[in-house]
Picture (cartoon, protein in one colour):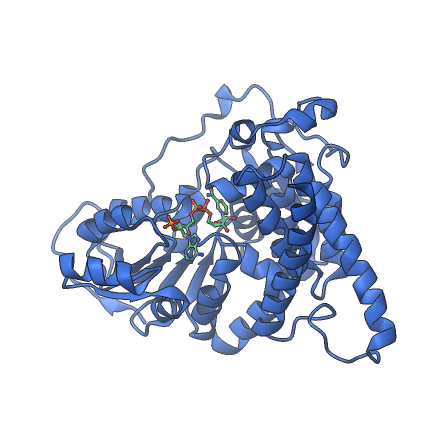
Length: 417
Ligand SMILES: NC(=O)c1ccc[n+]([C@@H]2O[C@H](COP(=O)([O-])OP(=O)(O)OC[C@H]3O[C@@H](n4cnc5c(N)ncnc54)[C@H](OP(=O)(O)O)[C@@H]3O)[C@@H](O)[C@H]2O)c1
């Protein structure tokens, strides 16, 4: 639902509609970029709801500036405290609160910017409610992509690809039918360890892994970029968003992060989208879609780019990539298991429980365990009997597969740490 607003004056053509937005994960890297765009276009956007988990001081600053009608925090205690300071805003909390602000009838667009599997229920409730959903939070799509796509079809929700690579493909495709896609090529910067000798990987520190050469992002995705698991998650995400077989999705290392991804069409044409690495561009494309917003950001100067490089990816250096391609091809519960296990392993690394190389080793071990368990299921359960490791039919299946992956990972991590 869009609401009318009257604009009395201004340089730009007056817009007759204000898009009302919920920002899930407003205090994160994606959330802050989103609010920066809203700040630039007050005549186009209105913040209806904001959420955070624990950064309540930062959220309070955002409430002062944007005056949302709703805000969601982690606990009832945090909500009570903030309610006293901001009587005009209604505070809700926990997963229920997040699903409420995602499906609120007044909201037009939900920006899914929570990190990890925690975004599953709130993002899904936005899709069920038929919202336009700008999907930055890739993990829910990895866990339950088929459900997202099927539910969006039923509810009329629009899934707008906000991850920079998927947004690049979305822009390059420009409504062409997916039958015309020969191949999707996701670009990967290679992260901080693209040139580090593999023999030195045992000594990688947390500070080094968090020091991404091209992008400033939240901690979890920064580690995923260093292991290249991020690209693995993106393959699954692209498979669902663009209805393209995993076999037709490739990854190339592109150290400049200028070309954000490409589409190869059946006629041999390639279309790519390029620009400086700045998440405000894909986010703004989704907020403004189907229009383009005259964004105030530093621009790419092509002449300043001496060269653009494209290289193949060494699977020895980035073992998470082949593991995730296998899980993506396997389908069923495998991507959700992999995602859950990865979240546990990354959290353990960020808590300094394990070394960097142990993230990939943990994943390899969990995915071996998955194969053995699936084989066992063949003998224990008649073929065709539903099981969350075989297929994801519901959100509960996705949550069970995620939990299973986390438990297996925890067993491995407990031994290592
Ligand atoms: N950052 C990027 O450039 C980028 C690019 C492409 C895709 N993405 C994807 O976008 C998502 C967000 O990434 P990010 O880098 O913005 O992460 P981030 O900086 O860590 O921010 C995460 C946001 O989610 C909130 N949050 C964390 N755990 C939560 C939970 N259990 N329940 C409710 N809210 C929770 C955080 O609140 P607190 O601040 O209170 O902890 C914060 O607002 C990820 O899925 C990532 O893969 C990010």
